[in-house]
Length: 207
Image 1 (cartoon, rainbow, N blue to C red):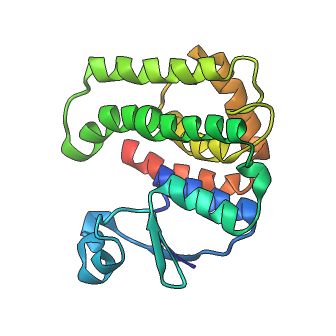
Image 2: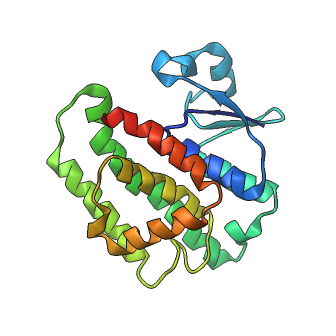
């Protein structure tokens, strides 16, 4: 399976950790967005939305990291990471959509204009980021992991996001449930070393 990615990207790291968890081998294809490689015709033919991560499995192209993660889990039969019980799966999906539409999005809204457009920090966007983290802290109340007491794909995707917050210097100590969960995930999420390597790469943007 060909995997188009950048190591610093949180969504790409989520897929790499999921692949490690299910035993999938990825043929890594580095795509330099800064150089515009995602806009080349050969990549546009694979993914007209020209985003990473993008997976190509024997001619089948798929993008959006959380879709790729669940595809890999179902393809390799690792049901414990994405159980079929409707209520359990619904909670996992809620956490995945929360990660995509709220938690990771608020990070991007605050930091990316500063990193890539040299815009000034926006205090209101920082507050929105803290609000999103507060929601996650509440979700974790009484739970070992993001969707209950078992490790699932929700944790894999969310830890990619939270480790990115941490790399940016966001103070997780204000959110004790998140901080405790983060330390647990560092020890229990398969392939976390891959994530850490990507986090170290991402940190360069803040130097």
